[in-house]
Length: 166
Image (cartoon, rainbow, N blue to C red; front, top):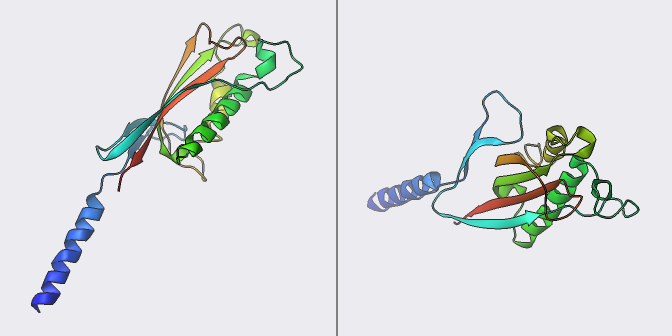
C-alpha cells in the first residue's frame, strides 16, 4: 500500500506540474473575430525572438522602379511581407502560431489620397492569423509613416515570436 500511495502522490505532483506549466496567453478582443489579440502574455520560461522589419518583394518587374506599382497594393505588399516573415520564422524553427506581437508601418497609398489602406492590410493579415489552420492571434500595432527605406514600399512589418521552453 505504501508503494501505491507513493506512486499516486508522484503521479499527482507530475500532473499538477504539467497543468501549471506556463503557456503563452492570448486575450481575445471581446465579441470580435478581428485577427488580433487585445493582449498576449509571455511566461518567464519562454524564449523571445525579435525579427527585424521586412519590406515587400517586387510584384511587377515591368512597373517603374521605386513606385508602389512595382510592389503592388497594400494587400499585395502585406502578403509579400508576411510570406517573407513566414520563411524567416521557419528558419528559426517557428511559425505564425509563435508570433506574439507585430508592428506594421504603412505609407499612405497615393491611390487613396495618401491615406493608409487599413482594409488591404487586414485582408492580407486575415489569411495568416486567426484562421482555422492557424488560430493564434498576436498583439499588433499599425501606424502610418511618411516613408519607408524602400521607395515605393507601402508596408514594413517587424515581429516578436516566443517559444515556451519545456
